[in-house]
Length: 473
Image (tube, rainbow, N blue to C red; front, side):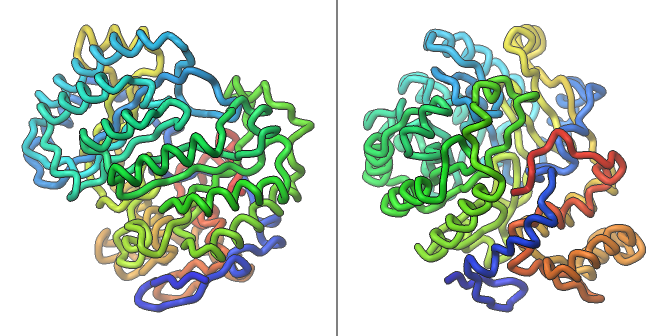
């Protein structure tokens, strides 16, 4: 069982508390994952590199920490379930010219923002960041340290997504030597039939080998990604994968819902829809997985994330310091995030900025200007208010109305009258407790925290549609 702290009150939480099938069926609908607010569909091309440059100059003298995200877009094979921005190629030589562009962008950004602000969070994502060879990884980290103030790795969160099929013991050693202290590995499912159906052939031995290498080299935290809803999955087959993952003993486990959106993601068109589990079986897999992970001692952090009781995510949540950004849940405070590389997204000075998605356009822009922003969004005071509300719901499962009123000089009940009507209906269903002073999401509502957050999403309320988002469960 799990013990969580919420506003100073301890409550015991188990899988049976989280999973209420009737409520899930009633409230399961499409919606954002809220790694940002406003969400990416609100970005527009009225924001470009010129606005980005001016914003970087403005925040140069701030004393708050910085976060860096580096996007490496290449994968050598395509996983059919994937919805990430990637370039599938077996031509490893394509990494070298991309790094040249990336170095130019790093120089251009650093020239504007300087290196006075400490970098306490760094994340390499993709694609497959370990598509780069060891020498290229060293060169990229050297460049980042030359141009930014990266603090010692024992004081920071430096993480990398990697494919264990492309990670030798030497690579793991290199990653630790250059400062990475956290690693995230995709597994999804160990069942051979499932792996073949989604074109992700990856043995448990390869995965375990990399995990052991990372432990030996001193990585502080290991995360493993799993996915339910894939072709040929059943409760019984996924249970075998869970047994193996639990035996691996990772610090964190992400249990993602497969979002089948073939009209948006071309690789998903190769998936045999007739082999996908029924909606009921998919929920059965989720329920079984939740119970299994909690019984194994993992704490439910939120949405689809589980962590050990001693993990930094768990401790940050208990201390009210958990945060959420484009990489998911984080222990770092709300800080400026600089995105570097093809299609990367940053959040600087109260604005979102996204780089070009096409390699040729990105290359031309970097060569000409050093920056490659093609769209973004400048948050209004109302956006900042709603962003704070949604962030606290996603991370703490609770809201203190008076605290919001003090910070933003509003009268909560008047300002959020429409949202409170929706919340009242959720309270009647047992998803949350609603009082005159605040709200607390109950265990049965935690899996559907996106639903709770959505009632405060002004843009979604105006659009009255969420067709580009995945189902909550």
